[in-house]
Image (cartoon, rainbow, N blue to C red):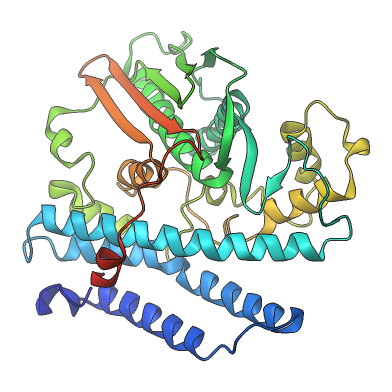
Length: 376
């Protein structure tokens, strides 16, 4: 960040992000060496505070990029944004993993050396992400979001899932749900809005087809819709954080989102309520092969953590608010874990989105180099 031109780095949003990271560095350098569990608990308290404080980083960076259009080449700003987001993911994954492992250690069900079941987490890593289940959960969430945005009587497209329905792999669940949630939300919005303009509004809108394909090294998820495709004038800005003609509108929308965890859960803020009984539904979804009554204390503890940890949202976002960063941020997530995200648009017909997921442990993740991170 210090290598950016002076006129860019003095932007108030970039300046606030710089201050956040400087404060975090200054705070952590004063943390004494961890020698016992009490020291670790104090470290965890500091980590939680920093994670919550840094929920403002993504919207501030995005607003800074948009406000600095014209002051620096858009490609250079996108390169900076991608680098700092990868660095942010690295730090948050390490922090979240440490918190999760600490909570596991303190849990009453924890037994050192015990064999993990296939449905278990290791920290934040879900050992058996079943692609079909993840797509189904994201589809249900996106459907709920669409009904809040367009009204309860709106005709929504069916989400069909075909292919290798048993495909599974280890992954960080919140990252995968964010990517698939954004892709499905884009498809549902496009299909609904095209259908509303059609002459036969009473007919059922065309379905969204999700195809899952598994190989030894990868799982590929294709999401196909008939939402009319992406306008040609929008294509140059599709993967860019600098949105060209739409910058002013996106900037105004970002002003309504002071915090952003970049998880699918933040789109469901009404459902994340400690007083609600949504936990039972989530347990059925995640552990459908068991009854809720048969869940062990271990599984219930892990479900609580997945739902209320900082990976679950501490922020809110209106369901119909478009921020223009879902696709580029999703690609950063995908590429960070040695995957890829690509779109093929047929203007006037629809879009095919291809998400390639590398099975973790089979390939080196695309980690940012130390020198590049220091340059940020």
